[in-house]
Length: 230
Image (cartoon, rainbow, N blue to C red; front, side, top):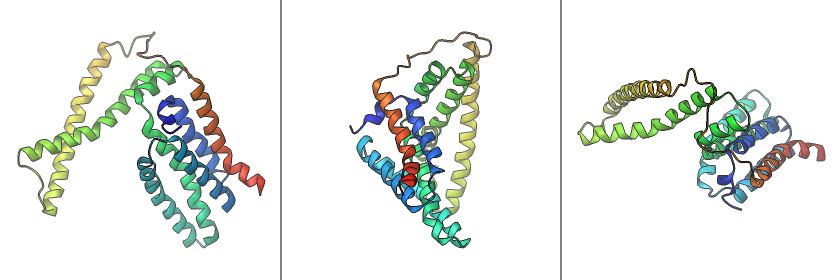
């Protein structure tokens, strides 16, 4: 069953984040907090292809959880600090993991064909997401180009500051050029005036998707069930 997440459609992947968000409101005591965190940890072991990416997301979410716990402790509510930290983990960790498996193009196809989201909004949203995913590749290309031309920052801290400034300016110029090309391409394809749109790929709903949706809802309900059981 490991790797089943990679075969789910994007809407089901997004439902895990929505269910965890709603379920986090039911994390009010230690039993519901422990039950929710353990449930998502077990699901990650069973369904995810590897632990490297989920652990990275857990570490990043853990920073926010620790800050919330420290704030609760400083405000004099030390008993509630661990529960507050667990609530942040339940709220943020599942969604941050699942978003890494979402393909923007497939999300647009499913949103338009399954949820009947307006086509113009879908096309613009997918275009924006794809531009954002290109930022890291553009940054690496600019950094590699500058190093080839012997314009790297070296070991001087001040040189790193100048390097970051020049790289940021290069990213801005590249983003403006890319936005211009994208706007021309979208206008040439009738983005502003077309009434009927077709989609590149179908948006099927399989039995695995139904099972994934059931799992998402069940995991989101774990905190509420744990509270009722105690």
